[in-house]
Image (cartoon, rainbow, N blue to C red):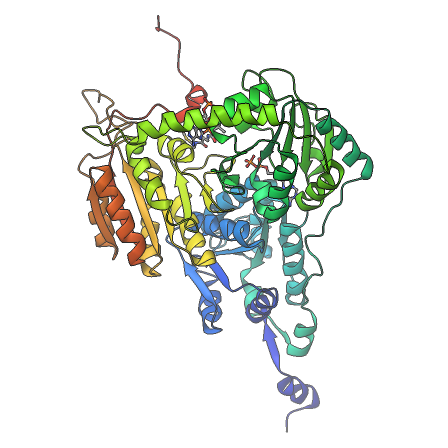
Length: 569
Ligand code: FYN
Ligand code: ADP
Ligand code: MG
């Protein structure tokens, strides 16, 4: 006869860290995890799949993290990335830091070494103080030390990732905790779903009036849409604000399509003009960072009055004076402005001038897009892609590179919100494959990734991740044989540091990894290959040969590449 305690213990149903973590994630609507398994988290993947959920296994944690962050951006639920300790955690941390910079909600969960060994630096397997290393690079960094705290830790991570300015959260789980048990009933009672984790933040009435008065007094107002506005998913309200006021708008790259690029009030093709000539600029979920020349200098021409809608209070005045801050969530702020601006006189003359400029530059560009050249350049190759994608407005465009990025941003119109995912605020290379996995998984729509050959190289092995899950992704590699260009002269002793092997066959690379592959040398071939690939739904690489002399150093941000003046005339 077992003694009473043994009998009681033996009769009580138990749970453990593995189960509590997965119960907590499932309870909070998580179905997809992106990661790379190994010690000590291998079982997380197997058990997660055994529950009928999806674990997308990558070849490097960095791209698993990029996928999780893009999942967060597209769904407004935190993207979940699971990695092993130390080196796996560090690879994932790059993506967590990028998510935080982009304001995308993501949670990185890494197994870690045991505290008693790490804290005495006694040399554990993959020993690293991950909690503290993560802290400066994300919104918050938590460690779970007791199995009964898994529930509160997951809720804290979710609320922190989603509330206010979205971002990345690190959740550190020491290995032994996964198999630590506790009574199942108590465990169940330790889990909950956070109520309203991303609450509306309403702007003050004085702030609204100040902004309304400024806009009403403007002669040449401009609305500038950022990816914060795209993330907010209040597309109709934003479109209504633009159309009710008649104010021209211009989108930052990932806000393209929030209102169609073909909308009559779109000033994207008159960017320099609208930035320089506007007198009042309404920033909606867009920071005045390097992408907007910090709000000063020749990009902005004459003095501006800035109105800024942002959920992060201390973003205001980050670079230049903001004359009418609207601190709150985009939807609440936009609707407060709409109410205040009802019946305002539309800036028709200004809008017509912008429309005239935009249609002129669009026409000028259109002629370049259809000009044949002996070897494809960025214009006629991207023109072919644009013409195909016009017929697939709900496909998602993933875009990375330098010239491949800048020219695609200009040439390929977006018609719907959140259909363009690119290098984001940091300008990160290598985000393409992870972004493509998440875009395909979370949207269920066709994905076209237009990548520079250098950018593709950062995460090329993840192409096998795409084929393994049979994702409907077409990767168009703009193969100009080098970084920026492919015609750099090599010094006598070594192949140029800016060139790639000219015999590289990305189409055969695709076939070797189970995908479809085709090499194209003309816009017509490119258009056909793209159409065929989208229709087939098969994972495909289109190896598009681009003139090695096409493109410029660093695309349109060449001014950021430093050159020595020593010995230069
Ligand atoms: C835009 N333009 C167009 C169109 N759309 N012309 C014709 N038709 C269409 N559809 C014009 C627009 O008016 C600009 O001309 C020009 O094309 C460029 O537009 P863009 O790209 O919106 O503006 P710009 O000046 O390049 O924007 C600056 C920037 C951008 C820093 C925001 O370059 C950017 O997002 N760069 C990201 C770089 C990056 O992250 N690279 C990754 C690392 S690369 P004008 O009005 O005449 O100016 C490592 O080396
Ligand atoms: P872009 O690069 O497209 O200009 P940024 O990433 O620079 O966009 O800016 C996004 C801004 O949007 C960030 O400052 C962030 O705080 C803000 N933001 C994100 N989500 C919301 C939201 N729901 N409401 C208000 N501001 C938001
Ligand atoms: Mg290249």
